[in-house]
Structures are given as structure tokens and as C-alpha cells.
Length: 264
Length: 319
View: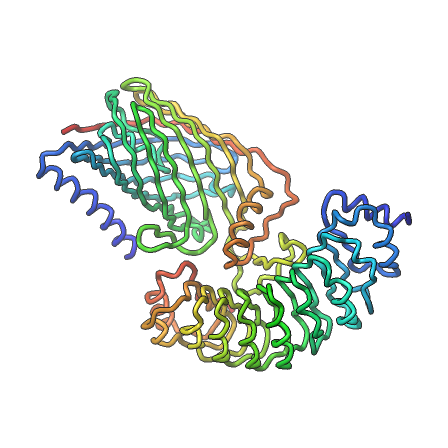
């Protein structure tokens, strides 16, 4: 066995993680093939390796649940999904890969529950249709995606409960959110939202909303007048007047989490 | 204002029960405890004076009881931080149950006082459930941690022996469990204890406690802290810059002895970041609402200890 693999093997004895991040000039295939107890590994990190393909030998890791492939912009995603679709992958990290279109075979990852797609450019409608077909998907990161608007096909993500769309250029949130019937947590911080989204009134399961660092000046009275599922609200660093802040704190005093601080 | 309303509700329930029972000529017993104590430990050092009032009534086997306490502390160390200043605290709780509770053993559910009331030995039993809240106003940079916590209480007693459970948290749930709703500070505490009166003046307590403390998150930063993130899979808060970054998770056993006019109390256990992360991660991942906190799980477990000695004056009245 190569020396490097021996060191790795020793390191991974105390954890279930095989971390090859930033390890240049390395034959991933050789490491995978020579790894003595692949079934013990649940996490593999292959970030920043300039990968083009994931070797077939990854299938030796039969208990792999977490695969990180961040910062590999030349990666062939179709081929990657094909290699790993028989593995029990729950979390796939594809951030910072300059992805504009998701591979159509993504839904073949039956165990996938969480996918990190931050720092890409997933603007096209088709991406959300594909994500909507990933049966067990629960959590999706779409922050830093240069989104000026959320496509209508966001409605296809009716299975997910946590959506992270912070650090985009969003000015409004679409009414299609009401179709996301299981959505419990929404992070939409650091956008350009000016009007508090009244769509939250009709998003049936939404519990916690992060809207800090937007341009919101007030929360509409309808939000206080109607019964809503929302019970937690983060509104820090919005241009909310002292008077409005007092009103919000009074009206939503029963929230389990309410924060309207200004730290700018 | 909300505090005042909640306190008023608790006191009204307690006293209306007392007056109702007076009208029915039903037994009621009250006690007042004045204490002065010193606490020394590796997380807390203080001198304290306190007042604790407790009352119990019962009518045809239906029993209610409640307590109010206030305390004034000269702090030297609080929540691991060396500090000089005065803290003020209060606690309010009420319980409803079945049985006879005129032995005032219900005072043992207090989380602010370790001393119970001296009453004659009586062969009584009680089972009840209750709620309450408490708050400590802290000085200087610790003032952000002056958070109200709700408490849920269970108590079973028989023949001078009492078993109780107290669960404290800062979350809000309806009108009965009324925490601050911040998800930081001394957020969660669980105490399970056994109290036994040996004779008219002596009592023992033993128990187990677990408590978690986390600093406030920085809501201005997106929760992408790599610490405790399971290799980037979980969202983790960064911390607010203007507040001491206090993390502790204490798991401890405690024991108390009290005699005619003094009581001794000690806690011994471990402070484990690994345990704190395990517990809180499970809660945060399980409910899936809020991101995790950046517990440093590489930190070694440390000893946690605390010793307290109190002098007290106790007066009780019987119907």
C-alpha cells in the first residue's frame, strides 16, 4: 500500500471521514482502491482537487453517506451521479462548481436528503424541476447563486423542509412558495427584499424565517391579523423604524424566536 | 410588563386557592425562609441573601402549592466569567396535584434555594405537576444573559421522602411555559432530585443535574461556521461579537444536608463541550429549526464543582 494511503488509513481509524481536500498530485483512484476498510467510511471530502471525473472505485465505500465535491468546476456531474447512485449518499456538496444546469440523473440518488448548491448559477427553471424529482430531498442550499428572482418551478420542491436562498439579489419571493407545503425553515437573508412577503401567510408549514440584512421597512398588519404558522422571525439589519420595531415586538411577542437588532 | 402579568397570574392562582380554601375551612400552611449564603466553585462565586415564601393548601385530596423567591448576590464569578457586581433574581412557581402537601416538601422544587422548610415529620403523600419561571439580572457584559426561563415541574412525595423533576428552558410555549425565546444563555437545565426529611430539623437531598449554556448567535452573519458543522453538512452560527463567548455543559451529581439553622450543598461533575454538542446538536438537528452552535468538541472535559453554605431563619404557620 502507498505510504500516503497508510497515513490516511491511520487517520480515518479514529473517524469515519476520508478527507482529501486540497491534496494535489494524488491518484484518487489509487487511494480508493488501496483503502483497506472502505465500509467504515461514511464521509469523503474531495474538495478543490480539479476533478474531472469520480473514479469507479468510489463504489467500494458501501456506507458512504456524505460526499463533498466542492470547488471542482470541471467535474462531469452526469458521470459522477452515475458512479455514486448505488451508494447510500444522504448529503452531496456541490458548492462552488460553476453549475448552471443540474444533471438530469440527479433524482437517481434515492437516499439524498441534503444538497448544497451554493455559489453556482442555478437560474434556469429546469434545475428546480430536477430537484423536485429527488424524492427524499429535505434541505437545499441555493445561497450565492446570482438569483434575481426565484423561478416559478420552485413550486416543484414540495418535498423539502429547509431552503437557503440568502445572499442573492431577490426583491420578492414568489407566490409559488405556497406549494412548498412542507417548508419549515426559510433563510432569505442578504437579499434586496423591500416588502415583507405576504406569501408567508399561506405557506402552510413555515415556522422560522430569516430575513436579516434586507430592505424591509415594515411588517404588514395582515401578518398580525391572520393566523400564520410562522413562529420565529429574524429581521436584524433592516431599515425598520423604532416605532415599527416596537409594534412588531408587541404583536409577535409569542414567537419562540424574534430578533430585530440593528448592528450595521 | 409581561413579567408583571405572569407573576400576577401565578400569585392570584395561589392566593385565590388559599382564600377559597379558607372559606371552606381547609388546611393551608405557609413558610417563610430568610437565607444568607456563600457559594464557591470553578464557575460561580458569590455571596447571597434571599427570601423564599412558600404556601400549600389542600381540599379533599386536591392540593395546590406555590413559591416565590427573590435573591440579591454580590458576584465574584458567574457563568465562568470573573466579574464584580450585584445580581438580582426572582423565581415563581406553582403546582397542582393530589394528596396532602402540608409538610411543605414542595419547596424542594425550587431551583434558587437548596434549603427546605422545617416542619414536623408527617406521613403524607402528594403527586403533582407545575410550571414557573425565573430570571437573574446580571451586571456589566453579562447583562445580555439576564434571560427569563420557563420551568416545568413534577413532584411525588410519600412519608417524608420527595422525588422531583425540574426542566428549565428559555423557549416560549403558550402562557404556561414562558421563557425569553432567545435560544442562547443558560438555555436548558434538567434536575432530578430526592429529598428526605430525617427528623424535625434534619433533611438530606441528592440528585442529578444537567445544564447547557451557549452565547448569542450573530444573526447578521449567515450560519456557515465550520466548527461543529459535521464537515460542512450542518449550518452553524457565528457568535455575536459584543458578548462573552461562554460555552459550558455541566453534568453533575449534587447533595445537600441541612440542620436546624444551616445547610450545606455541593455539586460535583464534569463540564463537557462534547456532551453539550451532542445534546444540543440532536435537539437542533431533530427539530431542524435553528442552526447549531459552534461547540468546540476538541476541548477536553473539565471538572465542575460548587460548594455552598447557608445560614437560614425559617418560620412556618399551620392551619
